[in-house]
Length: 186
Image (cartoon, rainbow, N blue to C red; front, side, top):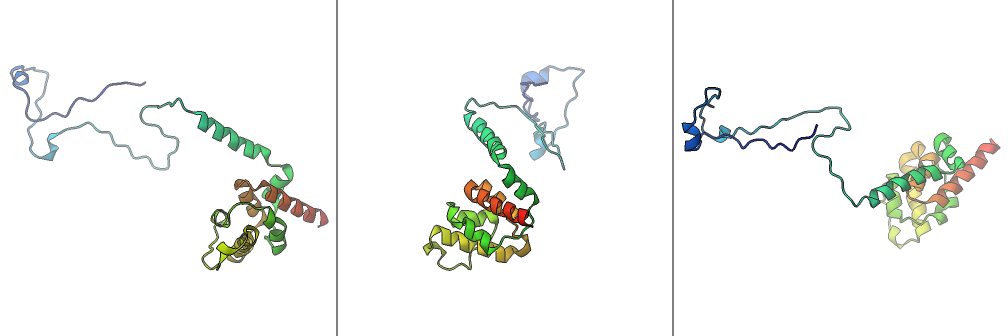
């Protein structure tokens, strides 16, 4: 139930003369105090732990909702557009990324090396002169650094998922195809 009720103003010890003259037997007079506790505002404090989807207060609806509709539909499309082979490799492939994987996709990645490094959570502090390299060479250096840092955790499935999220769909599909071929050979 919604209400537009506004709480009364805090009571103070100074009441107007007209209020003092009106005496009501049903009303208790608040004891007079001094200091900051004079104001008796009504506040409810709630402490929620381990809760989710809690709403307190008014609902606000904005008329310019095109952006949210577009973004939510495009995120659904991204999930729906993942080809079956890419999805399968992302779910089942436990292969560690190797140099051969990097060489087959490095020319298909157009994302900046810094964005890629941030996405795959690798450090690039030790890479010297990376800004002077071409995009494919810089991507190769970042991916090699990722393999060195994460060792056995630098999985092909993780790389494909990150590439897909960066909209590097061509590179993700190529890498997935290569690993599907390997799976058929085994």
